[in-house]
Amino acid sequence: MNKALTTEDIKKGIGKYVGKKIVVKANKGRKKIVTRTGLLEATYPSIFIVKYGIDDEVISRVSYSYSDILTSNVQIKLIRD
Image (cartoon, rainbow, N blue to C red; front, top):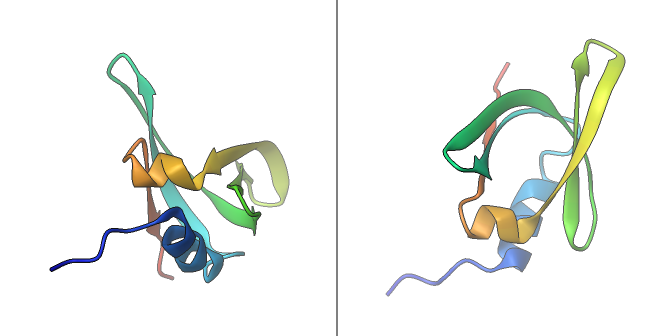
């Protein structure tokens, strides 16, 4: 029997990739899906921060909750160099 994922499992998994480039696919509702590439900047107990920008110039920072991943509203994928 498969063990169900928890937000704690997701937080531990994401924590390994702080400072790495990721692709974030977010469901914004009403059939709006946004796909962007950014840098996983930091993780906190309830949220994680993704920095979007061009090279060193920060355009925006967006926070997502671990429950967004659990409910499939947000999907992340690591970019391997």
